[in-house]
Length: 361
Ligand SMILES: [Zn+2]
Image 1 (cartoon, rainbow, N blue to C red):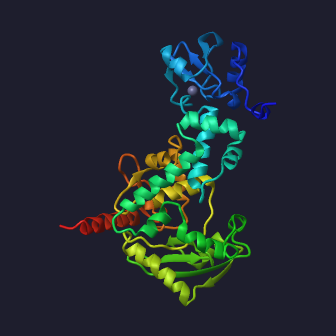
Image 2 (spheres, helix red, strand yellow):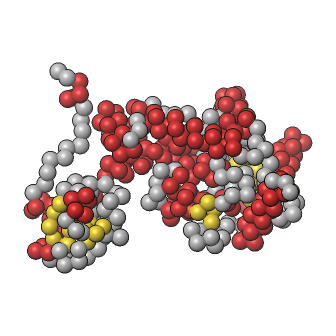
Image 3 (cartoon, protein in one colour):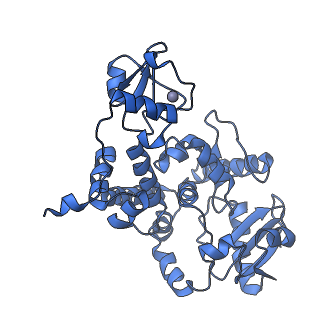
């Protein structure tokens, strides 16, 4: 038997009008991507699960996809965005974020398993949606990041490789210290079984808390003290940093005073796949430049997830090292910052000034 026929794939048999209408009434998410419902009275088409009020049955017709609806003169619903959120499209977007967040490119089997599809099928689907295979997408992503990092003024090749997600310097580090750092479960569990060292240092922007496990930095924040750290990691053993730790803390202070100089500091933190993808995108913003939340969402292959990207920026646990202060609203206004808009403004002005002066007369 042909091996391909053994692979379970989602069935896409066409639905009759009655089944379509029932799916619309149920707001059936599993029907999204299988058809769109177009409303004759408003000229708008929706995905089956749209939360908008249902029209009368006689005013809705069913079309196989958004393209057919547009051809028939309908416009996409702004609420459910039927063009963006086909089921397959969502799976491909999730896979792109998964690949973007991975330290090393995941295998096809891993990507497909993450998306919940059989590998062969998902390979075709991914290529149809993006024009690239998952492996080619991963390669181009890393190449783009490396290119961007190498173009950054004053950066060394080593730090460029690091920023591109190749992790050549830090991989050796991670291998050596794998058992010392925080596992995702320890992270979730308030740092149980982990020792965290900390120091509070004065900077020109106020006191900064620097905390790290044996593997790397796990918290950088302004205006926080040991007590705040204990609240965040209630199950960790929290100890004052020693002389070796003060070297790491000094690097963090140096970065705050001059954020244009890349600092190769080890990091020990966990987040969801989505958060990690956003944080990686933040680290790719060169000092002196800003991005909008929309651009961050697009950079991780999730153009529809602008709000979620904003939330992930706010969830950043390493102030300045992960430069969430470089993200603004699309209209150029500051947006939010966990440590106060004045500080965000001050960091941005500092970076703009320093990048201007380093450009020379
Ligand atoms: Zn809709």
